[in-house]
Structures are given as C-alpha cells and as structure tokens.
Image (cartoon, rainbow, N blue to C red; front, side, top):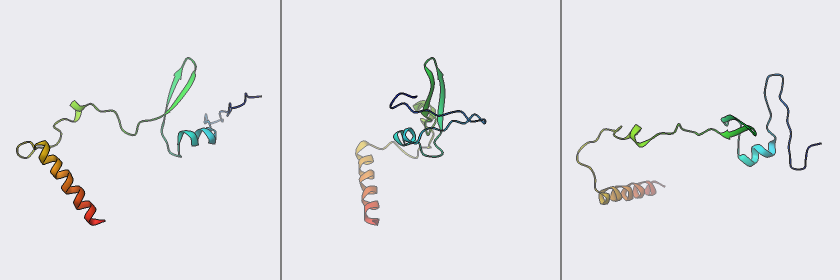
Length: 91
C-alpha cells in the first residue's frame, strides 16, 4: 500500500508513464508540455523544458543593423511613451 500523499503509476508496454492528474495540475503541465528527463542517484527527475534555448548577450549583440547615431536614454524613453500612447489610442 502506498504511503499517504504518495502517488503511483506504471510503465506501459510501450514505455509510457502517465503522470497523475494532481501532479500535472500542480505543475501546470498541459498536454504537449515538453519535459527534460534526468537520471539522478535518487531517481528520475522531470522538469519542464525551457521554451527557448539559452542565449548569451554576445550571441545576439549587433545582430540588427543600425541606422544612424545611437539614441540617448531620453530619446528612447520618449519613443516608448509615444508608442504606448499610440497603442492606447487604438483601444
């Protein structure tokens, strides 16, 4: 008999394991969620896979072409405010 609070499942003939609904709901693992599987000394560890591969700033720095001189912080702030106002005016 399993201990209280401990859930069990079994491996199918195809090697599939069904995770108990309570665990899937608690973790918010909806159908289609990709999981990473890691073999540890304590057992098998399942974690939600990252949505995007990790990147470093040096991998993407300068990836977009630049036209003209760099903008100042004040110019960037003004552009953000102008875009927010433009989007709000549409609503």
